[in-house]
Image 1 (cartoon, helix red, strand yellow):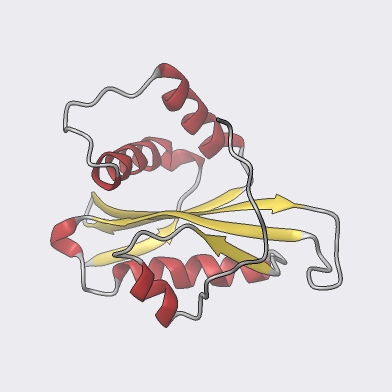
Image 2 (cartoon, rainbow, N blue to C red):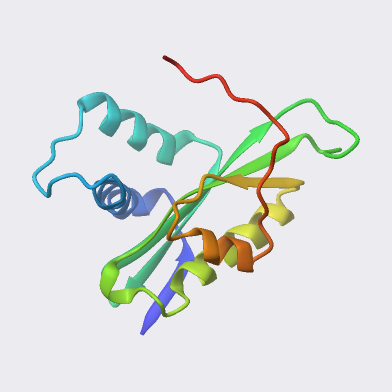
Length: 151
């Protein structure tokens, strides 16, 4: 039976292993890829101390999926009176469990919890394979902002 639930600090090893697995798959990295100490340490610190909600999907004791919602707070605006925004990320389901609605259930739970937390906007960066799911849930492309990344 597949269970989906909100993770807590006691689930740190499951959160870490699912995220590192997801990053390998999404970025087409070899199975034996070694992450930098900085990446591992910062990810662990974020899961333990960051402003986020992470959900895990389990089949028995096996982790088969994960998804996270990270929160940021900006100055309140007319469109976002709480100033709280959320960013959906790391939505992942193992290949053999895909097309069963697991990702949708994880995202729905995160959206519900984000709304309870006062988030007035949820953004995400979608892969091509994820776009149909997000579009079916009401996400739309935005031309609202520009981004400067570290070069």
